[in-house]
Image: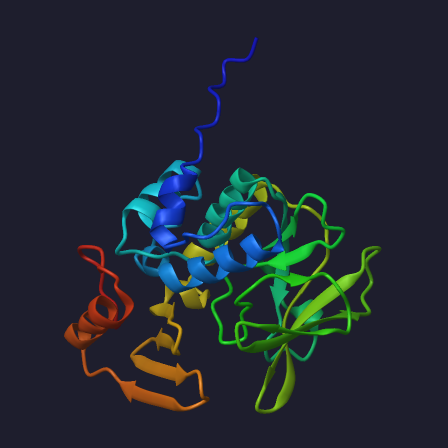
Length: 278
């Protein structure tokens, strides 16, 4: 007889209310697309726990408190995609948790460690698995899941993506997510379909949050997606990229200005005692 307590039931109603999703709950491609986009527009990407020297909890109950009931906080990839995976499973979607090498700007993909969490989602009756991801903090992120199909361009809520294969030394196929921008196709991250477990993410999460060489432990990195724009706070630089391609950038003068920007433009309350600009 096991002494372990059963896992707490995921509060799907509270999650869907948090992201503002009032559409259907059938485990199909339309629901996948709608819920992913709603999640991205509702819950910001932020690294404030790591900036404060703490690895954020990936316990589902803690994530629900912070991201669902907290309202004025966000999280980074392991938090977002752990929560999203639980929501998809509650909707009846099969989820395989993956890790990826972030390869934006890399000369050799092998030089980048696997530090990003992504998801493979399979809806009942749909022969196509989908790459789903609400936690990639970049302009090249997916806004909606895309079928796991090579060499096909997808339009996801106004962005252009495709998946390609690239040679590598391992026995599994290496997939690469590419985003299309002003300079053409740009690789975003590379992954295989090897499943990963919560214990794997606990280790990666701790490393990314606490390693003094990690960018997430050294400066604020915060994003928010709206229907009209993508907002990014990177250190003391606030960049707004509009849907029409226009870009506005400004330098925040001081700590007070950074806190105002987070509160007013990102909807985030800074934890007590945290210094944003160092």
